[in-house]
Length: 99
Image (cartoon, rainbow, N blue to C red; front, side, top):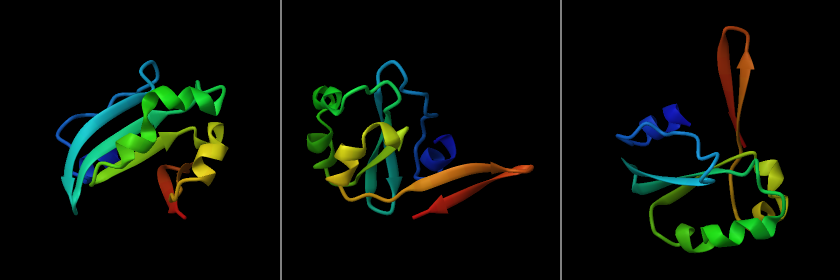
């Protein structure tokens, strides 16, 4: 997350949103202005997403949402267009797969 935020022009170092579930960072690259970072690990029911107002947050132009533990919210993801980025530890380095 930190490398992605830096690449997108964030001047703030992202922290895990574990307790707040959602953090927002200003970014400035390729027409993007805001990075939302959601940690869905503690989401037990997708209705728990409602207080976060994600649909409203995503209406802001230039907003990108990054979700950790997306497997916790499959129904929400099924109704929202998205790309998947998988980061795996491979030997001495890391490998990223975008699909």
